[in-house]
View 1 (cartoon, rainbow, N blue to C red):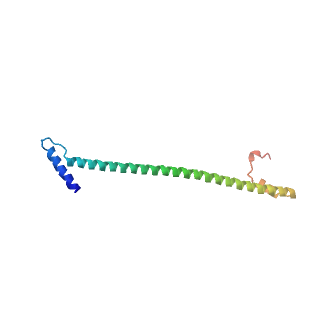
View 2 (cartoon, rainbow, N blue to C red):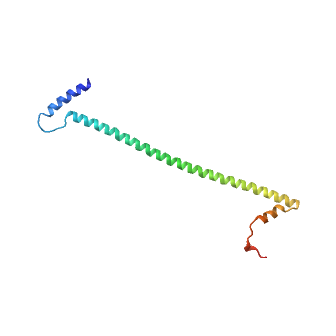
View 3 (cartoon, rainbow, N blue to C red):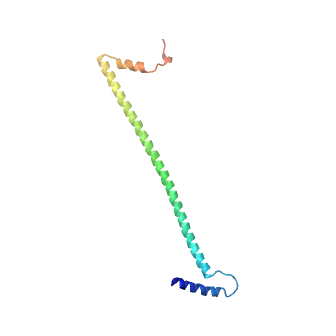
Length: 126
């Protein structure tokens, strides 16, 4: 019904428009152009949305990478801290061993430390 009504209006407008011989847009041409314009707006909106989605994806990936870098720094800092704690515990054990040896009059650990350390020939005066 609506289509038939539009067609009748289009025919009437076309008759009126074509009375003089100068070429003009017909009602159907205007209607088609309006449809094309609406389709182009829809396509533009879709393209804009796709662009925004792609940009957000890139931004999110960038943020994820920054977060991963920060987590890596935190973990490596934690690993260094754990290494330091382990070193402190080992030094503590060594200190107790040396203290016990000194208390008992034995210097085996102390002699081992001296032998195992690399010699600096620049300080060798013999």
